[in-house]
Length: 452
Figure (cartoon, one colour):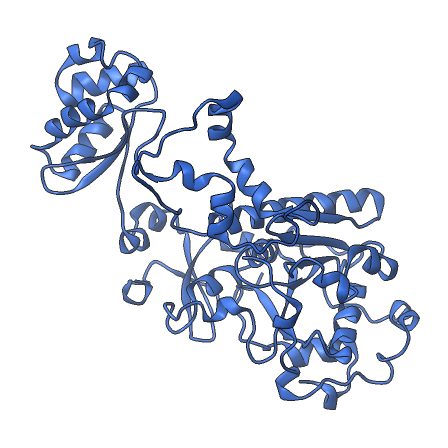
């Protein structure tokens, strides 16, 4: 686990600041801010027209004529988010420099905060998806707190939300309502199945969407399905929300107008299922579950070695197949065996071929098998556990681990893929619940006594 790993290769970043899913309105509303109802000052409690006319702006909202070092500096994102999909989307926006204000329930916060305590007392999902954000606690059933949110949204660039269907409209937070006070606002709604259609009101969690999208039908062993080991439906929805928001920001730069984005976990996951869908087109059977092996390419999967280890290899063409037979298995003639002469034939006869490959590996350690595969250009991998990934020499060599702050102290964090160095992204702290209440409310013009 992370608590036992050596951090001598981690770059300190504390000085460098350069869901699934759907949640109900009631989840936000059980308490007031820090147990006291928040009262807006007379100034902010005034009419909507005052909010429109107010000259105060959020500190980093679209500064005119100012050069920025990160792509999204100057963009303010407000997020009503829980779990994975929306938080992963907004964390990526924060990585690119956006100011992300995470609105949470007073006293409880994002329920992902309590998923587990594996990361030095904090929840593993939460620390992954919530760095570089500001935490503001609001009771969205309290009119004064809702006015705070509306004041915030009148100045924001993007709203991301994964409330239950209809909840945002009941709060007056639909795109149609919000664009009247902020025509340039981009609203991204994330849900399990989208805002219309017969499933629009259906509850959705990651595993359930994996099942609806057919992923379980192609994942696992032949005799029983298995879920993917990570929240892949949530993650896919968060990725598409992120990319669609980037596109909407580019569009707004041309038109001056905001837009609404409707992200469905089912559609996100179904897009990733396109290969098995096309494989099963026109009523054909889908790919069969094959454990850790590939259903339609062979050999492509794990093979046991003589020391009790396991290596994965993949053969993608006939040249590689001939090299595997000649230089690894030690039987050049096997490449011409009719049982294995084509990929389709190898898939049909995978059990017999697996026995041959494992027999060749029985006199080798996992390390020796990997070296032999490398020597002849056969793609391969070691089956690593989590500790081995923490210690992976390739990640260390490329300087991919840095250090970020959390309420429990510093922890390692992986630089986002594509970032050449730590200065290319924001790697800020993971916030404590309500940590930024005072600063945000003061910025919005609330009286000192009105702060939570």
